[in-house]
Image 1 (tube, rainbow, N blue to C red):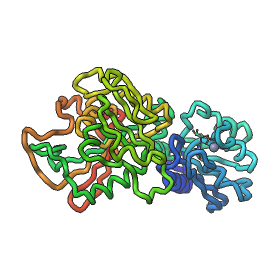
Image 2: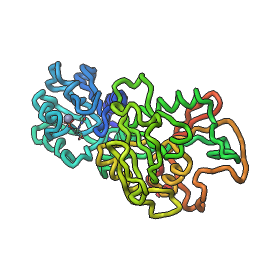
Image 3: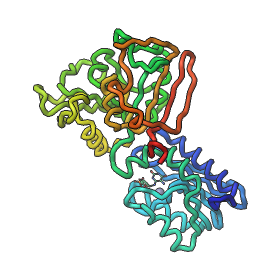
Image 4: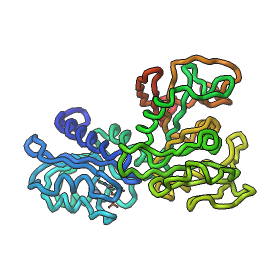
Length: 371
Ligand code: AOF
Ligand code: ZN
C-alpha cells in the first residue's frame, strides 16, 4: 500500500481505466469520459469505455458478458444511481456480485453525487475512492467544470510569434503555414463541443469552421459573435448546418434584428466597453443551456483578449512560430497588460513541437500564487 492507501496494482488498473476513457474524447459531452477495468485474481478479465453521448455506460460495457462474481471494478467516476438515457450502473454492479469498486472521483452531477457509492456500500460492496483523482479530474476537466456550474469549459487558441505577438506591426497574423495550422487545428477541434470565432475573422477568411472526416460522426457546434449582426448569410459558415449547427450572438441593441440561423440570440452588450461587443458571461450561460460543455475560442485577437482579460478562460493553446517580429504596433496577448501580482498564472503545461514552432498548452492555475 502507498500513502494514499492504494496498491501498485490499484494504481496500474486505474491508470488503464483512465487511458481507456480518453478514447471517448469529443463524443460524450456533455456527459463524462469514463473507462472501466474488471480484475479477478490480479488479472484483467474485461474492459470498457463510454463511446458516445447517450450510449451504454463504461461499467455496463465492461461487465455485460462476463461472470464478475467476486471481482474488482476500476472505474474513475462513481457509478451512476439514476435512470437517465441508461439504467443505473450501481444496480448492475450489485447484480453482477462485484466485491470491490475502486473509484477516482465522486460524480458532481446532482442526480448522483455520492448516491452511487452509498448504494454500493449498502449492498456490502467495498468502495475505495480517491485513486488517481487529480489525474482523472484533469483528463475529464470539461465535465468537472460543466457538471458543477453548467457553463462550458473555455479553451482559447491563439497563434503568436516567438516573442508573443498576435500580429506583426502591420496587423498581419499568419504565423504558421496554412497546412500546418490546418492539421493541428483540426486535431484540436475534435475534442470540443463547439468552436467560436469573432465576426471579423469570419468576414476576413470566410472559413467553414468544421472538422476533418477522421472525426467520424462528430457533432460540432459553430459559434459566431456578431454584435452588430452584419454577417451576410452567403458566407461558408452558413453551410453544413445539419452536422455543425451555427449559433450566432448579436447585441440586443443591433439595428438589424433579423435572425440568420435557428440559434440566433440577441443578448446584452459588454459591460466593460474595453471588452468588445458582447457580454461573454451571458454567451457562456446560453451555451451551457444548450448542453455545450466545452468551447474552443479560435479568434480573432479582440475576442481572445476579452476572454483572457476577463479571465473567462480555463485553458490556453498557444501556437508559437519560430519568428521574432517585435514592434510597438504589433498586437500582444493581454494587450492592456497587468502588473506581475495580477499575472494570469498557468499550470499543467504541455509542449508539442512542430516543424517551425511549437504548441504550448496550459490550464489557468486554480490557486494563483501557489496558495
Ligand atoms: C455516461 N457514461 O460511462 C457513465 C456516466 O443519461 P445517461 O443515462 O447516459 O446518464 C448520464 C450521467 O450518468 C452522467 O451525467 C453521469 O452522471 C453518469 N455516468 N455517464 O455518459 C458513463 N458512467
Ligand atoms: Zn452509469
